[in-house]
Length: 333
Ligand code: TXA
Ligand code: MG
Image (cartoon, rainbow, N blue to C red):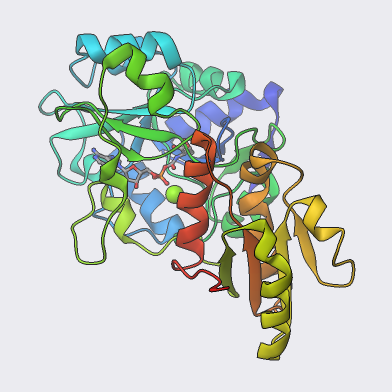
């Protein structure tokens, strides 16, 4: 049985980290799986608990920007981004100082990803432990990322010392990853912070990197693995106006199907099993992973029609995850 830690238990949770145990932690995006980044044995346990391929490098989660300087070169561009967006959902890839981080963290790369989450309890946990912690999402590899402590325990109970519970996360999709070791800087994974906010500060950023073709090598190693996959087939409905045609098509397949859509759409289909995305792209990003997990608890549903969003930066982040969960399958109206 893993523990559920609250704010007053932070010293206990930090002590568990220092002993080399795993402690899951809240962030503004999704829950992370923490281990002392300076303890090779502890980091190894993260891969085992998640069932994660060992060539996929981990994010180094820090209490503040100062902690980064012990492990990597903070360029002027990096300093600017940290000043503007930390703490916040922007992970920054930097060249590392030799010999400071284990290969188990970096996957053998000369770079590492650094993140300073906008969650006061987690920053306090890291500061109390006194070491940075690795922080992949706290889910079984391939499953939707966890946005509540319950999701974490569903996947990892018994495999970790505990989870620091700070309620549901706010953003719901993982941080944007920007690689500052290339010119121009490249967004490797879209998140709530996008080019509209980054470019005024640091100039042109490359957003093509996360659109990976079938046979290309992905830029972020994690992008090549199957992600967010629920048991049911997810089919993306690109235009809300296509929903009635998509529902008619789903009925014809003879499968039990469900809907992942906003309240305005769901109101028209009261008898179909459904999970609400709320009313806009913010609530949809917040609800996406919980919705995918909810359908896994309803194994009779083998097909899920899911609503697309367009136009905003957050919709790029939402669609990036939704298309992965759907294996890129769209409803062809
Ligand atoms: O919001 C988040 O970033 C969450 C929370 C828990 O902080 N964490 C998260 O970690 O999403 P993870 O491990 O699920 O995703 C990290 C991604 C992986 O795709 C990994 O391949 C990539 O970052 N990555 C890590 N280090 C890298 C590096 N040096 N170069 C390129 N990609 C890297
Ligand atoms: Mg992940």
